[in-house]
Length: 391
Image 1 (tube, rainbow, N blue to C red):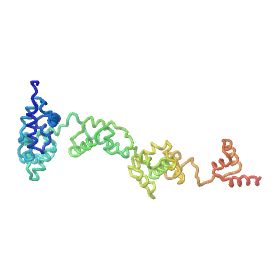
Image 2 (cartoon, rainbow, N blue to C red):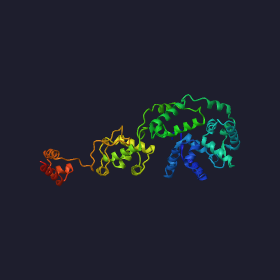
Image 3 (cartoon, helix red, strand yellow):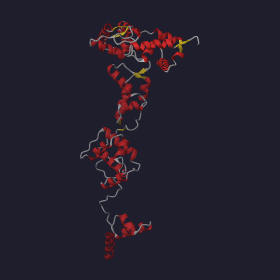
Image 4 (spheres, rainbow, N blue to C red):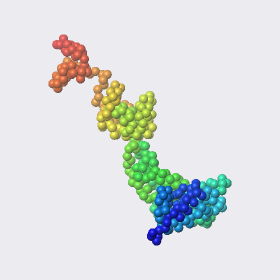
């Protein structure tokens, strides 16, 4: 056996004793209080369960740490941190007095100054205020009682060197939201590669204390944003509900079902249906942005649904190419370049003969040519007979 190794059996026997006395504690907690990695201790116990514990050796340093650990050193709910604790009430009364006398101080700042986590200090304050017994580490209690509020206020007033003014970032956020629909602060943060909660916390801190800044790297990422991707879309003041409805109908006429239109605009087909079938449609910013995004993405591509085309044709909806982007929102404009299926053009014998000759030269039969022209054989005969009688 190497000089820096020792038999694992005595160590395992002691650990088993600790586990027997404190069955409520996980093995990881025992390892943590001994200053040993939990995987090492679990490996020792696992080998012992398989019957190979007697052959196992362990580092002498680890053995000393585990053998030195006593039941009294383990964490106990009633005694706090393994006996190295003290009553939290005096320190919590001091903290309450500091917060009342200096409103600019925060609980988080006091906790960090005392080497505590903010959640631990908040829980201790809550328990003491409720009259429940609470203990905290002696070192933390001493540091809380020794806190100098003047030094803390001075440190809070000096902005860290790695932060910048937050007001330009706030102004830029407002400018982006004025230029774009569907541009929430969370969406802008994600687009800039920033955690939305980081931005939200910075804005909240700034609202409470205007001296608070934002991390320079975070602020620069947001300030670098000039354009936003879909589903955000440029805000257009001239967009009307009539124009939105025309765009929706035109996409359907182009072969796009509402399900696909909704997927392109990141909105539900149910919302689009409710808007399209309403007697007095009124759009929301979310719906307006969704329709505009879908229009930009789908208007120049044929859709996959013949059924959507048939339904739109039956309702007389014009396809996207029949509308001009500059006038589609004007209720007084009409679609251009389309044939009204309910309006038959005025036929004369010369025009009919010309069309029939042209189509038959393309290889269509007379019946197929008449069907293409939207004429029945009886009406075509009457037009031609009327021409012969007039002659």
